[in-house]
Length: 220
Image (cartoon, rainbow, N blue to C red; front, side, top):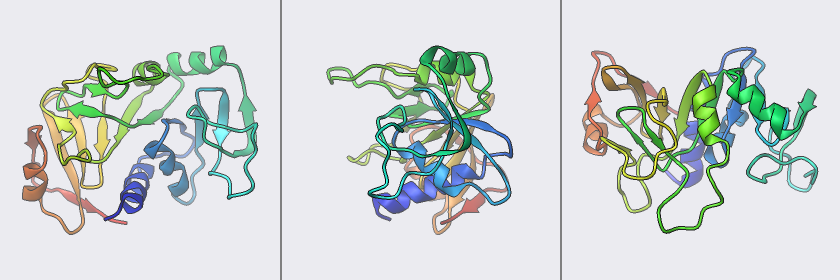
């Protein structure tokens, strides 16, 4: 599976978590793919913390509006009825508990629901951005990430080794291989991608997985 197919698979599966009327914040990069797979019959309001509620699909090539960008600087569109506001109001929405779900990328996640997604020591980073506020303020935190890094090392660990963004805040992890729920009993394997096995997922995951009697499957 190439990188684009992995991105589409993850975005499509996370989109199934959306509910009609949800206010949802999408992090930069991979999480933005979720907006391309909204299930039929529901309306979702996507927020970008730089000051817009009502983000639409990515614009077609050549139709970008330089006045419309997301928090990562990527071009966006706005749906009818979208609203614009300053950073103070944007973070009041987030910190005030008005975001139903946030979807964020991650460098590491562990079986306790800890998240590390803002820096690697020794590398230049722009800052934490809104991630610390989002994982604290949103009602549900979903992580969109590839299961392993480019060197083949699993990113879902027993314990994060990088500086944390937040402790015990992650609810769901979706990769191109599996869907895992963080519970008080640990990390539960809920679904695996079609064509693989539970044993294969356990083998490539450092974190300890609880395996329920029925594990579902998902596919493109």
